[in-house]
Length: 402
Image (cartoon, rainbow, N blue to C red):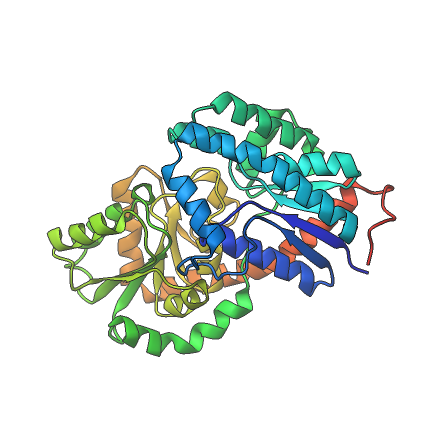
């Protein structure tokens, strides 16, 4: 018998957040559960594409662009009234077993509805948003945001953090007991990724990569802090040792114009391909063309979606040696790691990957095996979600089953 799950989020972005939202809902449905989404903008659009200019999206984008950050925070707070009413209406008609909410800054509607209706709430947390946005100078009322974040964490039935590092941060910040916080990393659909293996030759031809080229790639919405500039400079230093190597950067982002100028300055214009934004369903096709993939920098508490996609694609991964990533990969077994601030170390492991095809094949095969052995999949995550609900509410169940 399946559960009825009320999935609440406030996300309108078409990036990895949308991938996660859609994939978790589908995985829960595939396991026999009913899922009802409650959101200002339901997750019906594909990740990675251009936003469909619906009237709601036009309004929200205009508000976000024109409203000062303090006033926008007030609008986020006001959403709680709208979200609470929508959740209570859905609870009355849908009678959910539990609410699953993707945490958003200044959002406590899920907690309110959970307490009012007596429905358990699982809160998925992907980052410590109050501290993160304050550090980026994106908050005026940091104290309010931090208090509301702690309020939501303490009153949720359970908290699902995307890394052990983040779980420890949340426990310390909100004083949570260990049993109420579990780690559920990002995931991937390995079968969907693997199905694109047969497209390797066509994808390489489409990207202008020769049959004998060593293709190094990265996927993402590129920002300055991702460190792609470091990778380009290291690549330029190694050109003499790997003349047939090329780089493919899949995605868009604010850093792309500067990166394009840097490729020209480094004399790499003919060796670096920028694909621009692509729908998420085409990412696996581009991955099939690659031999090695890079993560020059990573947020210290994050669970990068691309890491799991790289692993499922069987690629040799070059990544920083930091605790959140080492929860998933093992240096020398299914990834080549370097100290995060060691540019020379990054260049050295990149050189190893460029010159050693056997090493690339071994790392890629091991990465694929890790996905399977650790069940780092969307279906595995869906099972962890329902198991967490069952553990935390054992002895209290009985209603809300379909």
